[in-house]
Length: 68
Image (cartoon, rainbow, N blue to C red):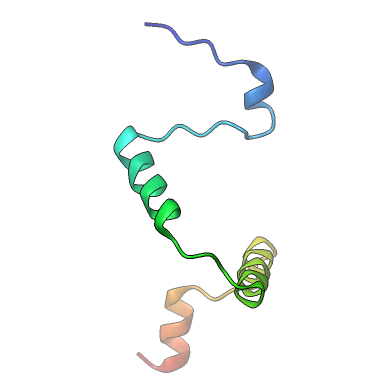
């Protein structure tokens, strides 16, 4: 079987292939998740921004700093 994927879906990273069981897990998680407060959403957005800009510590770095 051959599937043709339109180029406009591929060019902007708009296509994600996920196994059906994994999709169902994610769908169930997000449909049952509680809504975030404005403060929580702001914190999450800040975290994503910091990760995107490399402003984070790896678990190895944290362990090293804690002497573990």
